[in-house]
Amino acid sequence: MANFRYQGRNRAGKQVSGNIAAASESAVADQLLSSGITPLRILPTTGGRNVASKSAANLGGRKQGGIKKTESGAGIALPDFLQRPIPLPDLIMFIRQMYSLTKAGISMLRAVEGLAENATNKKLGAALKDLAEQLERGRGLSTAMAEHPKVFPRVVVAVVHVGENTGRLEQSFAQLAQYLEGELDTRKRIQAASRYPIFVSIFLLVAVVVLNIFVIPQFTSMFSNFGVELPLITRMLLASSSFFVNYTWLLVLGLALAITAVVQWLKKPEARERWDGWKLRMPAVGDIVERSLLARFCRSFSVMLNSGVPLTQALGLVSETLDNRYMSVRVADMRKGIERGETLLRVSRNSGLFTPLVLQMVSVGEETGSLDDLLVEAAEYYEREVDYDLKNITARIEPIMISIVAVMVLFLALGIFLPMWEMMSAYSGGM
Figure 1 (cartoon, rainbow, N blue to C red):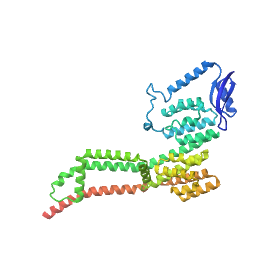
Figure 2: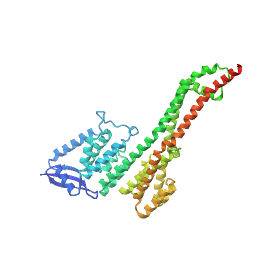
Figure 3: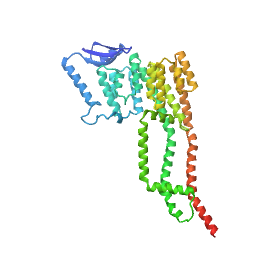
Figure 4: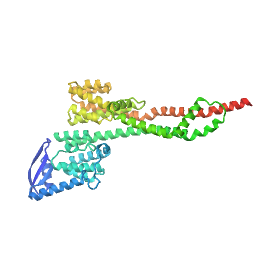
C-alpha cells in the first residue's frame, strides 16, 4: 500500500483535498469516485524529491509536446487574427465524448488525456493536452478552457463553469451537445438553400464576361460595314464590349479596390451593424436569415438559463454567439435594460426583434418561472418556419433568377438582331 495526495471536487462542485492509502492511482480514483469525489490530481507522497522531480519532468515534457512547443516548428502559434475556430463537428464530437466519459464515472483528468491522444483535429488535440496539464495543477476545467477561445466558445465555457459549480457537469455537456447539434443542422440547411442562388449568380457573371470579351466583338466589324445608324441598344452593347476588351486591367483594379474598400468599411462597428441589418431585409432570403438567428437566440438563451447562468450574463453571452451585429447590439441593449431594473418582457418588446407570439411566451415564462422551457418552444416555432421557408426557397428565388436571365437574353438579342432587320429593310427598299 502506498500513500497518495489527491485533489478533487465533490458533488457540490467544491474543491477538496487529502491523503489516502491505496495500491495504485487507479484504486485511489475508484475510491474517490465511489465517495462522490471527482479526482483532478493524484500524486504519490512517498519518494520525496525523486517523485516531485519526476512529476515536474513529466509536466515539462508534456508542455514541450503541447501547443507551446516552438523548437520543432510544428507547434508554432499563429497570431490570433490568423487563427480560425475549430470545425463545429469536431467540437460536438468532443462534447459528446466528454458527456459519455463523465456519465461513465471516468475522472476528468483521465477523460481529457484520453481524448487528447485520440483527437483527429490537431488544434483541438493541442488544446486538450494543455487542459490536462492545467487540470493536473488543480485548475478548473472551465478556467482552462477559457484560455483557448478559438477552440472553446464562451458559451461552452460558461455552461461548463456553471456545471462545475453546481455539480451538474454531466447535464451541462448533454445540453451543450444538443444545442451545438441544432446549430450545426441550421447552418447546413442555410448553406444548402443558398447554393442555388449563388451558383446562378456566378453563372450570370461569367456569362456577361464571356459575351463581352468573346462573342460581341465578332459582330463589331460586321455592324461597321452596314452603313446604317445602329440602334441605341446595339451601341450600348458595343461600347460595353469595347470597354471590357480594352480596359480589362482597369476592371480588375476597380474590382480589387472596391472589395478592399468594402472590407475596410465593414471593420467599423457602425458599418457592420448597418450591413447586417440590410441582410435581414434582403428580398426572398432576409426573413429566413432573421428567423434562423432568432431561433439561435432562443435556444442558446434557454441553454444558458437552464444551466444556471444569471440572466444578465446569459444575455451578454448570447449576444456574442449571434453572427449578426445588428441583432447582437439589440440583445446587448436588452441586457442593459435588465441591469436598469426593467423586465425581460419590456426590453424584449423594445428591441423590436420578436413576434407577438414569442413576446407572449416570454411574459408567461416570467410569471410562471418556466422561461427556459418556453424559450425552447419559441426556438422550435422559429425553426419550423425556417424549415418550411427553406423547402420553398427555390420556388421563391427561381422567378427572380429567370427574370434576370430573360432580360439579359432579350437585351442581347435586340442589340444583335435590330441592325440586321434595319439592313434587310434598307436592302428590300433599295430593290
